[in-house]
Length: 249
Image (cartoon, rainbow, N blue to C red):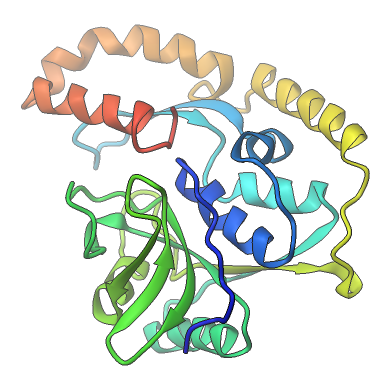
């Protein structure tokens, strides 16, 4: 089952690519930059846990919140589902595809067949628009090939992954309220989004995010050489995540 007339969104960042794909299916066309702005996506995070080999730095708000903000600001409706059951997780997706509705998925990119850089990152997003007996048909970033496919087995592993940033087989859909696809006047939404995003950045709830997160990173970076087992690879990965993978770039 593959959704007819499906056209994936072409983007550099995984969440806006996935969400942009769902919006496009509704007839809503926005640039990736506009989605970031209306999703109040600007941010900074310095994340470090004992279970992590090396700190993580990101230049955006946390995963999922961007989509939630964007959908709310556009006057649309978001339906999110999570479950610890692999069987139920597949049914949630299959039922939606069978009904002609593409689905956004949050998963660990390590298990996806087409990823050549095998690192565990459970904050990756894709949109799914079809399946057959062997493969799931996905929309990913331009870097990863755009319209791509992964085996159903590996998709299940990716969705059910555990660890940092992981979710319980999270899937989401976007609907127009009352069946209407017309957008609200976008001009006042832009102004409100900028104001709210600025307020959040300047009033972080913890010292790891916003401008306080930048201060923390500037202090902690001096200890990176002491804690790293392979500083060359760790710095390269940090650079890739910030500049290429889209998470913070």
